[in-house]
Length: 473
Ligand code: ATP
Ligand code: MG
Image (cartoon, rainbow, N blue to C red; front, top):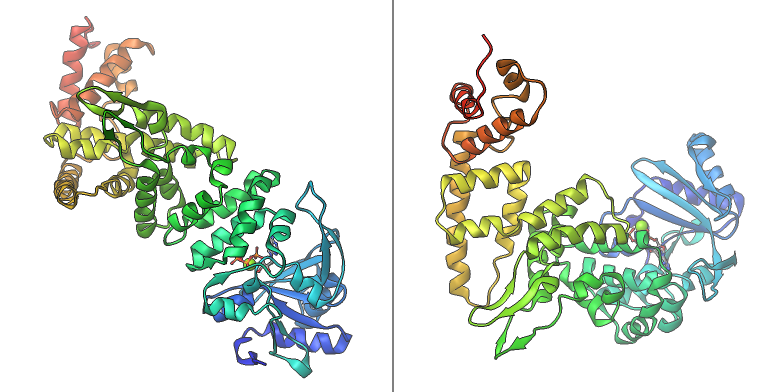
């Protein structure tokens, strides 16, 4: 039997051990914390299972540590209690036995043994416990050989997979999420259970699904998770817009690029370079407008006219449907999807100062994120083409830098305000003010005048004259 005493470094463990002896209640650390000892991952979430009342036990430990009872959060309904201590979040629960009904992932719960509690856990790697009682302190209790599965990098359910996943289909997403985060494979029997229970995912709330999706997107290689979601047929149920990217249509012998795999490549590349969840969402959704805009045009081939525009409109629908935040994060994703072709269009055409200025103006502070997305979007089977594009992309980057230094367009504030226009020509708020303001902005973006007060003022006078306005004396 393996002893893990020296892995229980946090002072809470000794304290729990003493409380366990004093109260005569068995206590164990279980789940993710134990798993992460072997994966050498830092984990500050410590889950404690006791053979008794979890809340009473937590209050006793807190008292011993001098933590006021008011700082222990507990949920009578769930029999759980939690407090923070020296950088860790420690949660206590009584060991339990669960039974499920068909309509809900919320089980009927009753008190049980440690073995019952380990049985109800999702995967063998998450079902290990370490004893905290003084006479067996540090002993690993691993009835399902979770340690072997860690060594062979395997996700496997402790009990019958079909029942496990049907009882709580969120576990399908958790299996895929762990496989993605840890680069583990799902055992074939476990995977069959996932496939058979896939239709049950509909009973899970969007919020919980998105929580797992976000963890997948923040992994080093999100495509692992998306390919598994596709393989077990859960993808069309939770992300139909992404499932619709699959496949290649052929007309007159001409096929188009496979958009799903392309999207995976782009998402992986972006995820490799950033921890910005919303930028990774933008990568996932950048081509989501393609199926709706796909058209085969004779002598030209496949076109996806305005897919960036349709796609950015779809972002709103997708965010709403997934209960993702409908706030500035969504606006950011919308904007990146809408603009994702702009930098590459510069690569294809001649890079003019005014096109670069317009891009800076439209992207604002998000220009670097847009450039990352756009560069990741350059994928092709023809290596020479990729190299040529990436080279031209460097030219665009340099140009952006040069123009930004010169003109400071990124956070563009027009040098002439609407108020100044009204004052100068003695105008109330009216259409003419807007017309003059726009004309000044366009002239600056086109490089006709410099982004400074004096030339803008002179330009304003000329524009006003065209409208028959004269400055007040
Ligand atoms: P993370 O690193 O994301 O926190 P975790 O394994 O610690 O991973 P938690 O959601 O914190 O995940 O859950 C703690 C433990 O509770 C898990 O290790 C597992 O034993 C158990 N568990 C959590 N969710 C489920 C579930 N849906 N079904 C069965 N057991 C679960
Ligand atoms: Mg955890």
